[in-house]
Length: 296
Image (cartoon, rainbow, N blue to C red):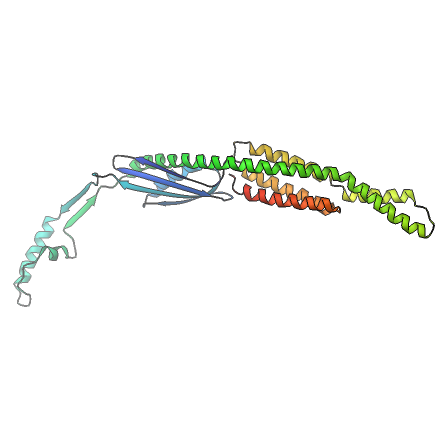
């Protein structure tokens, strides 16, 4: 099982330079990829996204891609438009002869300040065809590191969740043990109250009516079915924790069902010990829910 939070960094070196990929993930209901790069083309970024989608199923991902040119491989060339420069010089010579213009030879700075440059700097950029293999390699290396971290944290979550499930199993056994006792206690209380009332008017207890009342109470407060389903959901939950597949959404669903069953149990309960136990279970389920939000 994997957590949804993690970080991974990977690099890939080529002749023209090195690509660095950094991936950070946090909790999210779906897979969401936020890409930031050094002005890479849409095609290059898409190649990275496709690779991520093949290996990650859920989580909000922040992906950073950068390219650093290799030292000594700047591939910068400077060309000069000789015809344009000569035209500039010719025109400046004519201007110098005008009476209104100060007699000063034009400097290099004057020439460079002219509106249309005669010097052109060209930097040999890396092409998409050269960049995509480097990006894929860097992203793959980052994903390996990311997955290692997510698996490690996922294993820690499994240990914590199984401990909490064990506690819930103990609370379930307590509720099961209290089911018959609750009815028996009610029968004693009801018989005591009825006897006290009827003794005052010297009337015997109508056993048939008495048993009907006990049966009605037993039916209203019987939460056996809820506990059976609750136990089944706990078993499924624990089995899902041992799965290598993404189980976050399944655990979300099981938690909803566990809460539904325990809420119904609470609505039927009248015994103070049962109510206290239900409160503890609901508190534990909320802690589990917070942990499950971080599972892929």
